Amino acid sequence: MSIATLGILRHVCEMCGGSCQGVNVSLSSPEELAQVLGQAEQLGVSDPAPDGVLRRVGGRCVFLGDDALCRIHGAWGLSAKPKVCQQYPMIATRVGDETRVGLDPGCFHSVKSWVTGPQIPGGSLMVSVSDQPDAVLAHEERVMSVLEHAESTEQALANLIPGDLEGFLGRWIRALQAVELADLLADPDTSPSLRHSLGPMAQALPSWTTIPSPPELSENARSFALHAAKRMVWLRLCPKIPSPAVVGLLSLGGVMACGWTNTEDAAFGQALAGWMRAIRAPAVLGRLLPSPQSLQTLVEG
Ligand code: SF4
Image (cartoon, rainbow, N blue to C red; front, side, top):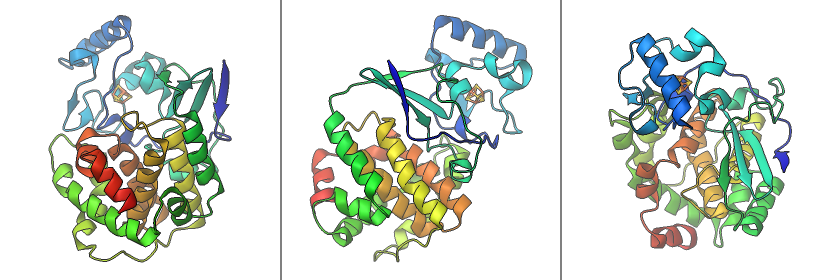
């Protein structure tokens, strides 16, 4: 079995607690469940893992403290946390004989450290690996090549769609407006980190009656955006969307929408992380692409 990465992995954890919100943290074994139950009892946390998934309160993991730090980590250290938490934002995805290791662009501060942060050894944190089918490998290679060789998000988008970019962006805005993002963010179960990161986009969306001017992003943010889309496709971070081209399209479309609303690096990076999380959520996907026909209309007009 070979291990592959998308270049050198660099990351600094800002300990923001954003990753401990809005996600299903599934426990990997009966032993892990028993450990969590014991820890919960000592921390005074009731019913921590119904159905083997960590309970959330107001979108936040039940173990996340008011100081945005993990209470299990605080009491017993990193190795006492569930495996998936120890590893995050490192993702390991097995496709055929290859284990792909990379960083989730859904981490809210990736944009800050993806070039300058300390190097993380690819294999060192691999405690949780998901298996993915290799049926779409050729298709995936083509999409990765488009993302690799594009000089801008606009160019990558133009190379992924059959028609003109302007027509696509007009349809993309209408598809985004149909999501009614403000309504989803107002749900009490939505995580505060998602509400914070995507709030500006949700506010701006109804006013987009024409295509906004191209985002004026820094060189770092522009490069990160293309890299983040590659991570989404290559690490198979949207298992509910089998087509690599559609994952690429939704990621790049999100880059445009995040850039239209946030031009400063940190705010753009947080919005993009929120978006990369949002497109994995059935509630968002179900409104964005409610049917195969809606996807065809979005892509082809
Ligand atoms: S157990 Fe700790 S690290 Fe894992 S999601 Fe909950 S608060 Fe975060």
